[in-house]
Image 1 (cartoon, rainbow, N blue to C red):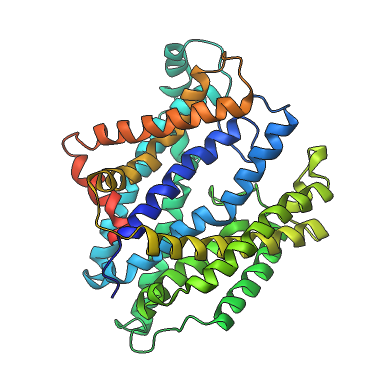
Image 2 (image 1 turned 60 degrees about the horizontal axis):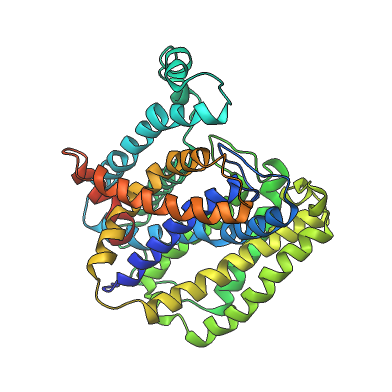
Length: 385
């Protein structure tokens, strides 16, 4: 059993900050979908921010799923199957309902371009349709919680079918052959899935075009826990991945530009039978695995000391930050809409302000009676099990 998880706490903090900055970058020209946009006509800003979002997309949510998978077996072993699932339905179901009933309607005020006052918007558009977001299954960034609930249900079924030991007597070894098999499987699955569900399209707010890697990394997290992979991750291999990552990060925008991205249309990369779709289906998991491996080794070796007060505070609030960041990012950008700055400067200002506001407001929310316990458990659940 892995005993020292301080570095995973710190890695989770980094990933949470990246989520906030990722969505902020979309506001100012980065590739992706969000509630509010500005300065979409600045070519340099769009290129730089789109590279930032494209690189993030290869690894940050997949690494969240890996960490979630890593802590799942120990959490399951401490509970019955019913208790394990009930706890997660409570921890994830309540935030999902809050998001759909409260946060999503607030975000629609900006995203729909409503011209009246916010009070009139609530009176005319929200109150007459109290469960619109629920019926639309408008989960926004909280699609991640929906996916985790599905993965947990599948894990429970797997444990029921295979027995309680979950392969712990014969753990899967981490070998180069296994990593190559993972990459080959995800690359092929990416291409096939994106024929039907190109990146940018969704089913129940889930972008299935990215799910081959998400499923694979969640399973890898489970195998890593059982097989003690964290100790086996090699610093030498991480250095090789570091240099490979640099090359791949340069190759990604070069390939996008060669495929016509500068003309403003990247749809051929998102799915289909073109060389652009094949290129993205290959480079996406390759760069994702490389960055994931390098980050895990770096945090294990450099950031695994005793938890400081700041680390504990940031880690405890990270889950709530993920839940509430969408309206904070959106309305911070909206409040600064008349600031005549270059979009990259506005990205820096809005991103930093949003991160500070998110963690501050999250800490205040966790003090509310009745929410404190839920938020605190949820905040630790994905790292400590």
